[in-house]
Image 1 (cartoon, helix red, strand yellow):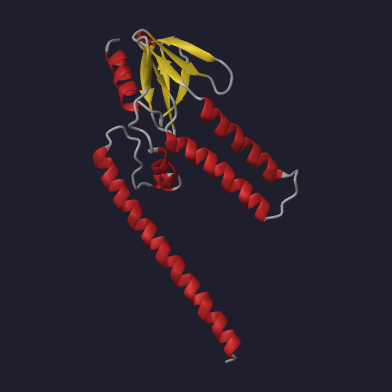
Image 2 (image 1 turned 45 degrees about the vertical axis):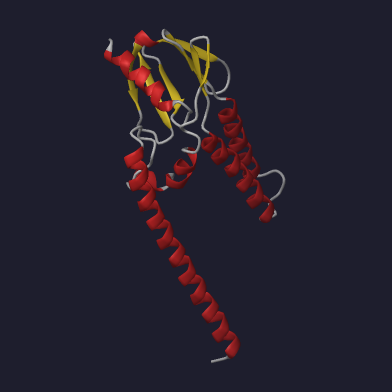
Length: 199
C-alpha cells in the first residue's frame, strides 16, 4: 500500500478514535453533572438523563450560572432577571451562529441571516426580561412589548413541562409563560406555591 494512503488512513482512524473518546468523556461528564446537580437543586432546573433532556443538557447546565445570586428588592417589590448563565447561552449561541455564517462564506442575505436575526431577537428579549412581584401582585412580561399584572390570589396552577419555561395559569383562563432560569427562582416558586395553596 502506498505510504501516503497509509498515512491518510492512520489520520482518519486517529480522528475517529479521538471523536469517540470525546463522546465518551462528555457522556460521563453528563452523568456526573446530572447526579451532583439533582442532589443540590430541588427546583427541577437541573436537567436529568432522560431523552427529553439530551438536546438541551449542556445549555441548561450553563444557564444555572448565577442562579443563587440575590434578586433586586426595592420597597417590598422583588425584581427577577435572567441568570448570567442564560444570558451567556443566548449571546454565546448568537456569536457561534455569526462565526459559522462567516466560515461558510454564506451570502449576506439568506436563510442563515434570518436564523441569526431570530436568535438575536431572542437574546435581546432575554437581556431585557424582568419579572416583578410583591405580596399582592405579580408583573409578568409579555413576549416582547408590555407587561401584564396578575393577582397572586388568582393563580390556580404552575406547570413546568417545557425545559426552559414554566406556565402560570390564572383563574380568568389566562396563561403566561415565565423563564425558569431567573435569579431568585426558588423564592418565586415558594410564593407561587403558597398562593396556589391558599385558593
